[in-house]
Length: 506
Image 1 (cartoon, rainbow, N blue to C red):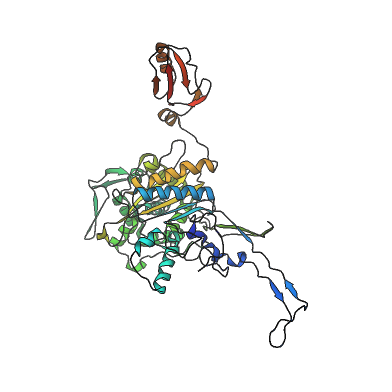
Image 2: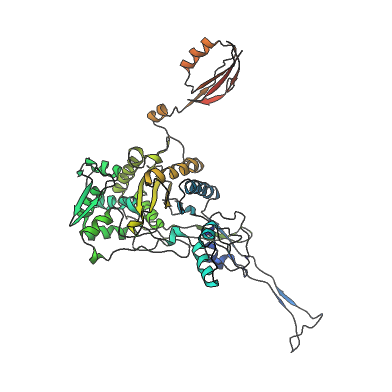
């Protein structure tokens, strides 16, 4: 089937944008969601005919001119989308993962900056299988119905349509509920022997030998399961579900894309002690990545539930604004006090806990790791994930990445956290977030700059003395002589502390 539109970036954000068919009707994605605004009106030529339908030559005719469709302006940022797709492709290749999902959002207003579903497909050739589906159906002859079903799977936006057990990243929600209900203080102490017995079940911590004695701050930094099982017990089922509801986990987010799934939760009356314990650390229920992102945004933005969205405004072909798109929000899902506490706790997870591989000098990053074992548990397959935000004290961006079926090491803190660090390193300066180093960071990472001194004419002895004065990195000394004749960088250039230099001696 022919695709009517042309998409200059081929695979970029393919499962978000979607495409139009030969009749210029949206088939999937934003193309179908906003079809009424985008499709325009066909032109018409009215002619005179005989009673038998034969056109009368030279008869007067009327024309109704075609009207071009409107333009949809998106919050999707092409540069951020490209950055996100690049880091997702990098980890997918290095970990031989089956797929990678990555969403980047403004936690203050719900604007989606990027949404990646790897492997993507080619929007200009959407009826040809991508590499994933080509490999999946290699050597098979599919019926038309089977191919249609396979194509629908390939076009599916898993960020919003697929649910999963969130694992330890859900501890954000449990901790928030416990702080709101004041059933825990930061100074409360817990003991983790490596497991907790709940009724007749032994439920283990991810650290086999346990974390020993720790306070709540250390418990969240360590992502300790027994700590959160205790919080779940203190909250009880009613309060746990009360905060699930307040944070929007029982309903769809309302994103302006078709095909959004809802959560899969226990009926409240079926939740016993074991179910409550496993729910407290993100198992035995399922949500979408986007639902987790929205709930976590409320935790860090002061308690506001935002509606995630891509459409910003509709403009006519001549650029005139037709409509500004508005989305509902709701306030006070979380108190300001709890929000401030959670931001600090989640920053500590990155600076000194399981998320330290997401640490970025000069930027305050908060976040939470997760390693989810896929069902059935016996499959030994995992989803490595990390949800991160920055700056931690005034979040301007929040992102979640899910890496499915990584080969080898699969822990979220090891596999997923660096992906968000890599992403943030690129997009935070682009978003206008300035680096702000602590004194310790400036010392540790040789932050700062100085003017390159003039080494020309200096002896080796003089060079050695200067190397002790200036904060250079490595010296590459070339030549057999005693006098410097050339240098790089050149004298007078501004260089960073710890920079390597090259000197040529004659």
